[in-house]
Image (cartoon, helix red, strand yellow):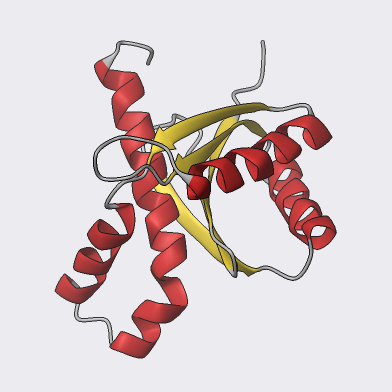
Length: 145
């Protein structure tokens, strides 16, 4: 019997990368951490550690499209980074439209009465959770689960 692989989501920014992982049934997304970016080498190693630790089969990367649906410089930056991850670890990479994921994460944290300082520390991780949950929900709607 083949082992079930998890999904790992990345919310890629200039200074940080939010990280979330699915449960084994791919029903829910849980936040793992926010990686403080130092170098591409260190970023890739940290992501590789998560791929191994959580037995990840697919990386889901938030694609920061413009509000009108077009792709700009940020999308190109994110695609290049995601493709490096995919090439280095020989892993499937999927992109998910992340428009408003940070706004949704912020609203969730505010409604949970999380202080502004604490929100700043976890916002990228929570954005990754929203990206992954949206991706997983989309798979179920398409009947892929």
